[in-house]
Length: 95
Image 1 (tube, rainbow, N blue to C red):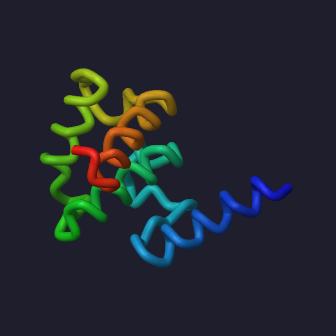
Image 2 (image 1 turned 60 degrees about the horizontal axis):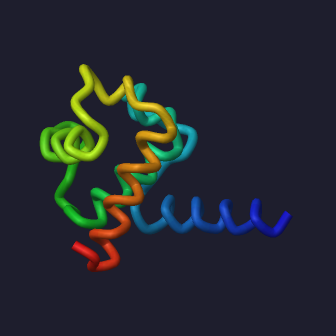
């Protein structure tokens, strides 16, 4: 399907440009969700010096968007979509 090809092309671009590894969680369970990976890639686009070893600012932004949770592992796909939509607005210059 054309949609599948488009999604794969976007994933390839994110892998190439932002280092998103679709099959790898880097030891973080919250990165199992593709939406989490997209949100992390967006965050890294906004803040290039970001590192998985220090997620403090990222976590603060995520929880500001979806509400406080004990860990990022508690977020579902709908939560990550909300985070991604928010970060996307920032990237496009809406905020």
